[in-house]
Amino acid sequence: MGKDMSLIPSEQGKYDYEWVDPSDPRAAEVKTVEIVDSVGDRWEENLLIAGDSGDALRALSAIPEWADQYRGKVKLAYIDPPFNTEQAFEHYADQLEHSVWLTMMRDRIRNIKPLLSADASIWVHLDDAEVHRMRVLLDEEFGPDNFIATIAWQKVYAPKNSAKHLSVDQDYVLVYAVNAEQWRPNELVRSASMDAAYKNPDNDPRGPWKPGDLLANKPYSLGRYQIITPSGRVIDGPPPGRYWRISHDKLRELDADNRIYWGADGSNVPALKRFLSEVRGAVPRTMWFHTDVGHNQTGKNEIQALFPGEVPFSTPKPERLLERVLSIASNPGDIVLDCFAGSGTTPAVAHKMGRRWVAVELLESTVKDFIVPRLAKVVNGLDAGGISMKKERVAVDELPEGITPEEARQFTTLLGKVSKSVTGLDDKTLSALRTATRTKDQTTVQWTGGGGFTIARMGLSLYEVDDQDDAVYLSEAAVNGVFARAVAGQLGFRFETGDQVFCGRKGRIRLAVIDGIADENVVRTVASSLADEEKAVVVAKGVVNGMAELMRTLSPGSRIRKAPDDLFAKGTIK
Image 1 (spheres, helix red, strand yellow):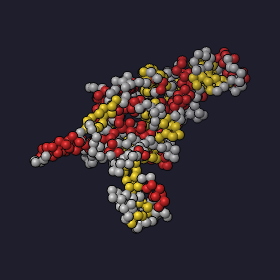
Image 2 (spheres, rainbow, N blue to C red):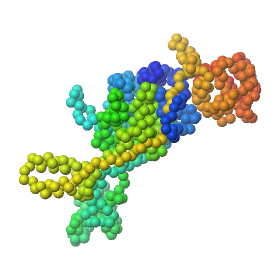
Image 3 (cartoon, rainbow, N blue to C red):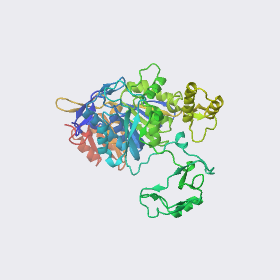
Image 4 (cartoon, rainbow, N blue to C red):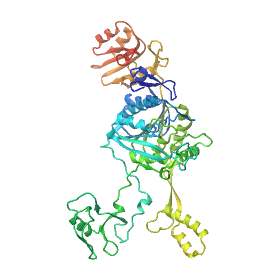
């Protein structure tokens, strides 16, 4: 059910929907985005919207003033929708029927797509409840060829002993590109453990290196030849069924550049020296462990530090998790979108990382009580948690070669335990070991505040539908400037103020919205106010007979529309 239907909210500000025909005006309506406040400076760079995500996404793509900023310009969409686990949480509902949930998500994905740039990606965070269905949906919407990967995030740090069957440790993030041939992930910063594998046993001036295998399984026409090592040892060739991965000439060239290692005595099988200074960053992988990006309790702790005494969100995501996503899929200055903002982790991390952002949250109470205060703390430099501070283990002095600070810390901890249970150990040796592996915590401040954001909310629906005969009427909200602004957005006109006759423009076409009846006086005023070669679209709540013909006579090409009947495609209004 729902494949050929659309959903509209049954009640403002709740995850509660009703099925309607896709042609229903309420499903096709472009609602206004009403700016209500701003925080900090450069507030125009970032946007927080309270309201239904479907309405917000449609408006950002359709209303010219917003489309100029966002249509085709979002580099990364990260969405963490309700997981549909049939549970009710303190700050959101998570209990939609499968077909309702899927249709809601399909509509959101379709609304997101026009906002994405050609080199963008979308990351959808889910658990086991709907991830398999979402994979099929995303294949349909983006194409299976644009599937990038499924990331498994270790969301807990300990097993759940009360689990009925198995203790579930992971969530999933489905990654799709707009164009997989064009999209490329950023490399990650290399960890100390990665770099620890690089050594410099021959004191090469190019620095640490590690040996690379010169053997290959794939047949290579120039890959079978005899080698004589510097010590004089003769290697008849690669093992049976294998090949040297480079030609003999290339081997001599690399050896002349001291890029081949033959072992301490010059008699080993040759190995290619891969220098740390020439290695790229770390290639992103699909297993994300809590030790690297945090877990659910990390996210809760971050929220509780910001809002002491408040009931934390049930599944807030840790900032390091979003830092990993944004590091891979965006760059400073790019626009990041999250239309299920929840506790506000995505915009908070995006702000700290120098990205522009758009966040949408359905519940106005969540926006007011959590997201705005949290982001205001980010802007004002009052949020010292999450990725604002980078805490890492570093060596007090130079560590033994190949040992990372974390390994050194673990060694001294184990050494202490062993020394307490084993007698006869030499105190001088123990002291030397502890001294050689001394480490300490080092904290680096990464964020001190700055920037700002705009706060907006979605306007009310201007249409009501009679349940008895499906007749469509204008709602009580369709008055004065709200009506004019909404009509301009619905028809794709750029809204303008300051003109007593017109309120919108689309090239050489002017828009006049009449909060009343279009009579002869209105028609003649509009026609006489047009410049040469301009045409007009007049939208009124009522039209006197004969006025459409008079408009066409006075200004050929101009026309009158009656609201709401003439604002939508033919057949929409029943």
